[in-house]
Image 1 (tube, one colour):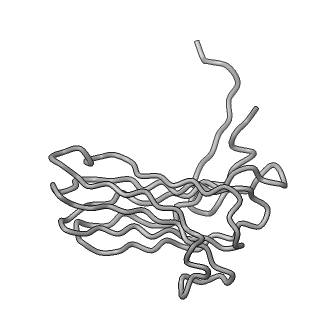
Image 2 (tube, rainbow, N blue to C red):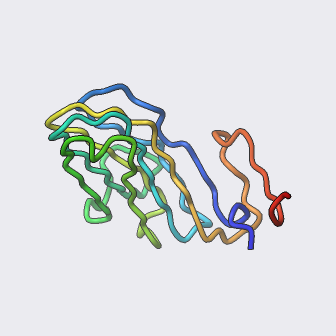
Length: 146
């Protein structure tokens, strides 16, 4: 099995400096995929920072007025010490009810650096998949080199 032929990887949000703001990702069209996993990479996270990664759905290719609001999945974390430095938050949505999805990472209470947010759309109906323009190189190898 070759996983890269069954998934599409997209960088949906670039790295962000320390702040207490919301980061809203690019919108993904889920046509042709059964699910999507959003992965937020953290950098230096200040103690007491509250990080919440939410995936929302929309019937239009837009982040405005997502409908319905009930079509969301959330994972939240409150930092203590260095427990969130250089870590990952992830939310996996299987068979989203709406065609378009996007992520929202809120950073509240204290600053947090974000290394970026990646989305992996999986179980493609048409294979092999074509990777997003944000993937600048991809390779596949059999076995292990000596």
